[in-house]
Length: 293
Image (cartoon, rainbow, N blue to C red; front, side, top):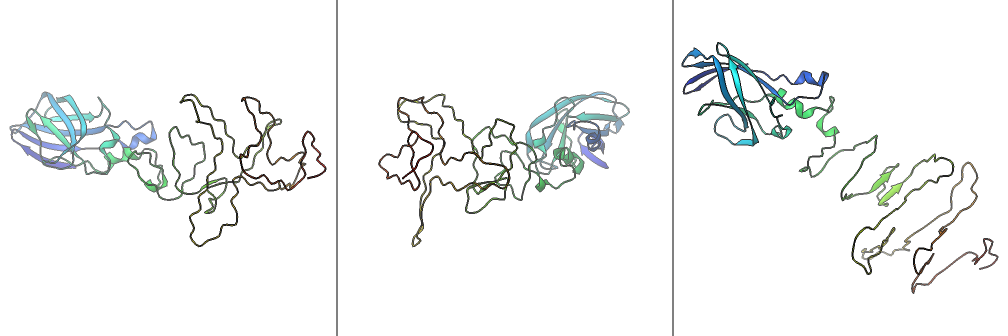
């Protein structure tokens, strides 16, 4: 498009082009804006090197500078015609195009050329490098200021969390989340021979910390009942039901399996403290075939 700009000494006709969109077909987006124009000095076409400083503002006149980005080019002007790639020295940050209306500020000598030309839609395109034609809401935004992400998201590969992660609702693994289950797991495994399949496996290593009562709790359960007028039938801190075998043969089944526990000064397979222990089946000590309760 053509735009006439007046500022003291210069009469400035801008041919303003954004040549970013095609880069998706060939390589990573360059984060540059091609800026072309015709520069006249007191009505005469300018020739020679001209120092031009480029930055971004949120208004065509006055306004505020966006970010700290500034790039200066010594531009070769011939018969008033010039072309410069803003961002060829230092890539234009994606954060410039964060939804605010953006204008390019051109500073020559002691003057800003006003009004500033507005960056049109093509300039914003490189902020959507990986969208692949989908709407923004189809993607998870990792922007640090993102508070909530709406809609259902499907990940087909691994997800790694390197910091504290909070899940406010229910979590379903291999199954739809269930409102009555904080974590609901339903998975099919095909482990190699000699290996097991684990619904939940904990391998915790304590590396630092003070001595004393600072234990490692691989599984810690502390329910709270706050239901006025309701009767809770029971609380099971760990509940196990019989295995369903639809194919194959199950050789051994253990409610609690403690094959070897010797690392501590005192080793307890089951420690109940002052709690009453109830065993409904036969109890065997030193035998795998108990005959009586």
